[in-house]
Each structure stands twice: as structure tokens, then as C-alpha cells.
Length: 284
Image (cartoon, rainbow, N blue to C red; front, side, top):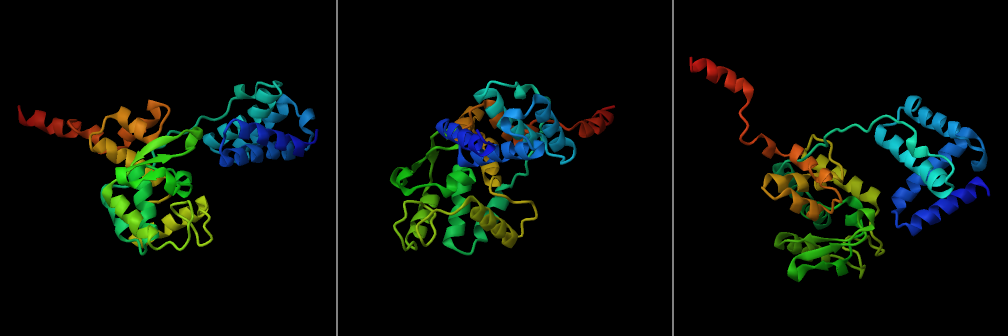
């Protein structure tokens, strides 16, 4: 079997497991990089070759811990899970850094929404923020999955190929109705181009970047930032963390706890020790 045939086999296996096309493309990319790095046929690649390739990505290319983890997972999928040949998952790589993402305040989100110049852009931001959507979920949102009368909706085949319910609100539904009146096609998608096809993830990213620039937001604004804002603001408004987990569709509560660290709620009721220093002094 040639290296090209290996890529086709891996793609089929990943599709059968329900992985997203984005994940499939990443896996195939790293697997093909391994083949090019070694210059060998897939069957002649040794365990040591794989270690050297991951070291190359880490040292020469300075890949992040998350990128290295993805590369190792891609190679492990073929050599460990399909061929049962090498225990690639045991190869040590640099740890994934735990950096907190930038989060927008409520005022900044409103500023972005109010600065939009058309109904489409306004609805993109409102929908992604008020429903806590990933960009892939927003571009693929279909009208049949929205029950505007009952203010609910469904995200179909989200991350991990799982469905989840979302909550709509009257302000959002009003914006949806205004936007839909301007559409000149019968596309099944909420957001669609003139030919009826949905937008690409890249196109949404560019739209969001332009909107934020026009709003004068100095923070780096990217598509996922609205999902982070959604989770953070729910916590700040006092919603129970378990309910936030359900609304965001997180499999693990540990993932949701990120929003406690991002919210201002963690500082409530905590007396800063600098103030205590002088209070204790005044009592003497």
C-alpha cells in the first residue's frame, strides 16, 4: 500500500468515527508531514523516526504543546490504533500551556454589535454571543433547527458530533426576522451567500475581524471570543456552573471551570491583603 492509500484509509476511518472534516484534514496533514520528513514508505517508518519527527516539530519548528499533541494523536491513530504497531501515545512532548484567553466585557460586546453596518453582520455577532456558538456551528446553522416561536434551537453535530439545545431570545429572533426578509434565496441555512451556500469559517473570521476593527476594540477579536464571553458572562450573572456546562455542551466540568477564572466573580468577597496591611496598622 502506498502512502497516498494510507491517507485515504485514515480519512475513511476518521469519517466512520464521526470526526469533523477539520480534524480529518489536520490528521492527514501531520501524517503526510511525517512521510515527507522521513522520506520513507509508511511501512518502513520506525518508532525512532516518529520520535525524531516530533522532536523536529518541537525544537526546529517550535510548535506549541497543543500542536504537538495533535501531531502525536494523528500519527498514533494510524500506527497505534489501526496498525497496532507502535505505542506512539507514550512519546513525551512539551506540555500544553494553560493560558487564559482574552475575554470581552459586556460593554465591548455591545459596542461591537452597535457598530455593525448591516443586518447580516449584526446577526452574526448576536447569534454567536447569545447562543455561545463555535464558528463552525454558526456557519452551518439551519433554519429548520430554529424554533423561533418557542425561543429554542438545536445545534446539530457540534463538537464531538453531539447535538445540544440552545436558547434564543426575543431580541435575537427580531434580528433574525429582519435579516431573513432581506434574503433573496430559499437557502436552508440561516446565513447564506447569494448562491444559497453557507459561508465558510474563514469568511466569518474575516467579517468578525473587520467588525471589531470598526468598533475600535483594541483586544484581539476572533470568532471564538464570543463563546468565551458567553460562558464568562453567564458565570458573572450568577448561573450555576453545571448549568453553564450544559448550555455550552462541554463534556467535562473542568472545561467549563475556565469561565470562573475569567470572570470577576472570583474576586467578590475577597479582601485584598494590601488593604488589610493598612487596616491592621490603623487599629493599633
